[in-house]
Image (cartoon, rainbow, N blue to C red):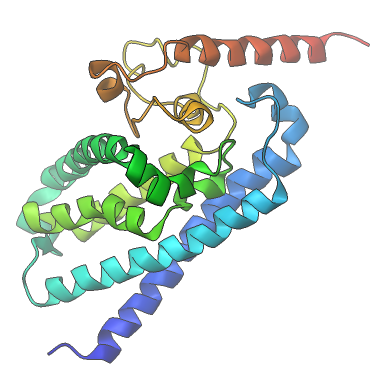
Length: 267
């Protein structure tokens, strides 16, 4: 039987590490856009009429702390299974090579995007929404701290894909870390409240299937569309993308260009 002390020590290290990474990333984005350079970035603010208050941010942070604790429990359970040899997590890169490691990261992103879209749609079922997902949607004008502002049950649903990865196919710890860091960073940016992706991003042949901040922000504002996480294709296939998404994205850049032009005019 695995020693409780071993799992407890791993859990504490995991919780501290995740809290630091999340705290640093979310705080850096928050203070840069919401505090220090708020006036400079105002034209890029997606919802021009600010609805967020200090109390909302405190709720988001409180919920994020709970979510991090739930994620830690899941990480400890997977770690225990790994020590018993039940998972397909491996630690020797040479076993499958670097090419496979990179492929596994891409595969996890694609699978996670699919998992997220369909579980997210499920969370919008009236009963689940009221009992669970509404916690996340208390942030109609989300800040970066809304990224993990989730009901504990939804954390388990979201982390379910992690369990799939651990048991479905060989995956290196480095690949898992890269995927998790990518997911966390893009999730925080998705809740930033300011559009940081460049003009034309939404129509570029290579990038138009990637969700910019506006895409998910509109989901928080309107609720019944734009369910995708990394990409827009599931929303397009199932026709759940808001029809005015491109217009809203373009309007932000038109507003930004106008503001920058006025700032350059001589006094």
